[in-house]
Image (cartoon, rainbow, N blue to C red; front, side, top):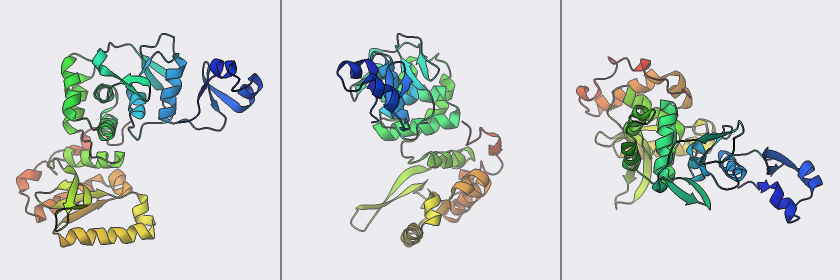
Length: 305
């Protein structure tokens, strides 16, 4: 964690002088300072906001997700709190909704919404694609299930954007290891393909898991992998990928590789390659009937924020 300080406390114990506070630190919020030159992460901003509240508020939303260990939360967005007593500055959002006692927990000594409540809030309050990405991240970081989040949703049937949350929970999956993997899964499902399984274990002859495939359909031995830039530009990584693909081919798997450019600029091509692999593997045409007759391109943008 970045070394955030509360100015009154640091001055009282002599940890810093007033001159040092001015010359070596930058004010984050009232009475909360950080050393100059430090770039705050979403995790840092969550703690800074909690400190601003006098350590009395509870952390929520994106800030709670970051505190709980979820990755890919935005570092430049406002922090989110509940039960804060002061009027908040522009870079802190204070939510006023009621919380049950069992929807709060303590993480690293800080009060925050539970993983299930955090995912519930993110799934309601974010645009659909971003909501799925962030709920995926909370599921992955905390080990909770979609059913755990659904329990919170059932308690609040009339909550704002509850229908959006239900759509998010229909597709959320803690197996995604990056936002791009989530977007890839959304693309395939929106195109009408069967829902893929994530993190498919591949075992050796004695049953040990030796590899995992990002997502795919094990019943047809068709896998889909998202490869970031390093897979195409790093010679060692590229050589390892060749070995990896040959390993899967020897076991009878058909693999579809997808790059960032494919996903962003050629999504229809990605779907066509996945469909071709499924049909070649013996998948019935009725299983992929949604593509290309369904106008999947009119669904919400995968890259919407």
